[in-house]
Structures are given as structure tokens and as C-alpha cells.
Image (tube, rainbow, N blue to C red; front, top):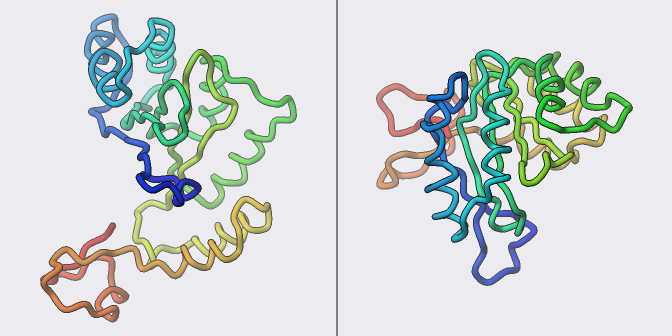
Amino acid sequence: EFDTANEDIKTPVPNIFLQTVPLRIDTPEDIEKCMWVTRNAIPILTGSKVSEKLEKKFFNALEKLPKGASVFHVASMLARGSEGMRLIIKRIKPEDIVPYLESIGWKDNGENELTALLNDIKRFSNCIRLHINISDHVDPKIGLECFISPDKYHEGEGWNEFFNYLVSKNICLPHLSSALLAFPGVIQEDQTEEFSFDSYMPSVKKEGTNFSNA
């Protein structure tokens, strides 16, 4: 992915995400199964060796994962010049997020803002993915990627209420909310077909056509 803040750069630098097999450590043998990330993948992306300290942080983050949760994307945020790694965690329950973060060294600001936010968000979203950045510490800033399952994009129910909440909390700008709600959520697979926007709206996946979700 590319940061829009870097759009003036002649040759933009990407942030690169690797979709992995589910990663978690439950036994000593699992550590060896996860070493390819720190010994091969990240060094190839960054051009430098992963430090022993960062590798231990990575393994610790995998060992402390709550039951059922796993890392399924590992990223190098090259465009931001930030050290360390980004981990994206799926199938983590909202009530497990704060205890998990605290178990790997993350600290709340003392006002329980994240707990309050999660309690609000789970009224609108039934699927949350957690984004964390690890280096010699766990970055205080985390990301919450929210879904409504089953995901039907523009046909899904609940998005208007969710975005109204986000706008009311100054988490999302009104014009971005409108743009996202207007996005049909599909792409044309066969670029040789004549484009027709009408084909996008009736369903996310039209049987027997060249349209699918994105």
C-alpha cells in the first residue's frame, strides 16, 4: 500500500504486507516454524538483518496471542521509515485486545480510552482485526480494522450507523464517510468487457458475469 501523504514523491515508496499462513506460538517447535519471517522475509524487504531483540519481541507477540487469534499479515512500513514490523492479528475477541496488548508491553494512557472505544465499536462491528507495530517496544498507536460479517459491501446493513458514530466521535471526516458509503465494493475482472456501472449495483457477485468483490 502507498501513503497518500507521500503522493508528491516522484517515486513513491510502498509499505509491503506479506500474507502468511496463520502464525502463533503454542509450543517450542512453533518458534522454528515462524523464524522464516525474521530470518528471511523481513531482511529481504528491508535490506538489513532483524535484530535479536526485535526477533524476541516478535516471538513474544506470537506466544501471548489469546486462544483462536493468529497473525496473518506481517508488514514492513518502508514508506514511513519506521523500524520494526507491523503485525495484523485476526480472530481476536474485542474483550481480549487490551489484556493482550498489556501482556506484550503496551501501556494505556490511564484513562481506559481504548476499552471504551472497543465497547462502542463492538455494537457496530462483529469482526475486528488488530494492527500493532513492534520494534524495541510496542508502539502506543494501534489500528482497529473493522468488518460487518458476512461482508456484503454496499449491500451490508449497519454501515450507515457505524459511520455516523465515527463521524460523531471525530474519528472519520464526513466527506470520507460519504465516499466510502457510496463505494460499490466491486471490480471488473475481465477488462475486455465494456464498462457499465449499472452492473455493479445489484449484487456484490453477479452470477455468470465478470464482476466480483474487492
